[in-house]
Image 1 (cartoon, rainbow, N blue to C red):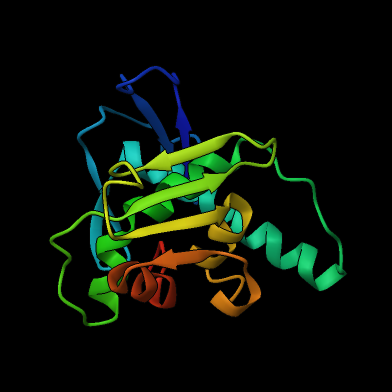
Image 2: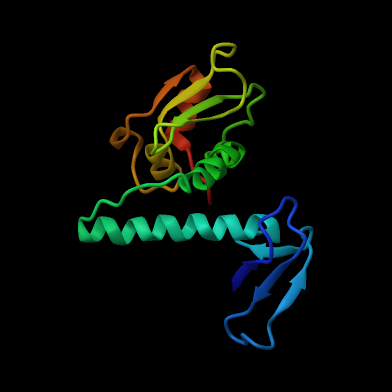
Length: 169
């Protein structure tokens, strides 16, 4: 199934879904609230498109790794980082750990040196993760182990998250 965004405006007004088996007959115009089956759950069209982009990036990394090629990251990596941060609850659930009550601050340095941050102010919380955005994205897509990154964690929950981080089941 391919998902084509009709607009990049927030919220997405409509999405066209194309079924690969029947590309002409399979077009479905849908609003942002329609859910599609996805690995044991349902995902809205608004989330399906970014997830597919993340998967494309991750599998592209697999090919680059197999060829021994290093690619230049861009600010578009921020989408993968955002999904990684949004996957905090999934990470703990998949590891059989209880959901966290306290938010974790995430500060990542983008490829151009820009600071990307999510969660509470890092100096007002005891739980934070910091490091290169590319390392975080490689970790949450399970293309690199924690030991292969330069990510740092402050706080027990943040430390645990780096051990179990994932953006998919």
